[in-house]
Image (cartoon, rainbow, N blue to C red; front, side, top):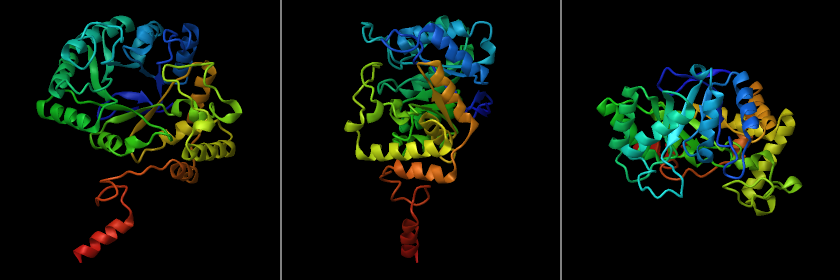
Length: 348
């Protein structure tokens, strides 16, 4: 395991983060406490130190398990959690969202569950499109000054919110966000349009979740071994090959070919494609599993890399249309030479 600085901070985090949304079976799926602890220990033994959880994962069970597993070794780990979301059965209108009230209440609840007196990284889980960004950033800065969190961060929010949060922090002298968490995989590259360039501009590390496409990129839902009901998840949908778009089938064929060439699993190919997108941003994949053997396989992705040719084949098979302004404006990394030729012609 190698380590990176998290965004513009001096905080050293491992090149893979441990996702713990599967810790606990409260949602009707996930890993038992025994299997969760085994995953945690496998990750720690491999040198991993970056733990990702949330106040709402498995209705709080995830944070409780992490807190228990951290006993006696808390200082070694960088613990990241999130606030915003709440139990949908709650009748308290202030039990969710980005307000200062929910921020402060959520931090106290997370500290108790995690059995710690500080949180290393705290994310806005999602922007609620109601709370002023000034209120969020001032709340974060107050918590930093109180010593209850070390660094603020942002997850699953639009690029303009990320930009304004950084601008407010810079102008007001608040603690700046150091990380941005988004869904990113060979099946979901839309964040390349705005969010990855925004993170790179503000020197934020990107934490990528869903790197195996919800299991689709592992071959779990192909015709040969389709699974849609024996391990249902909260987000389950019919993902058998018969219902996949032709572009997805082409991507899966390319991924399978490269997995065969490299003699590594499809999951490792998918993880390595994400972690090798260094030109787009500094990226740390979040790996999660329901079984220890899956965690072992995911961590093994660190032992090798895709070649330039293999990266290009995967890029071509998963390409998206960036749209405007990327296919129009000069001075950005995605413009084709023809655009520059046209502009040079008009200048002449």
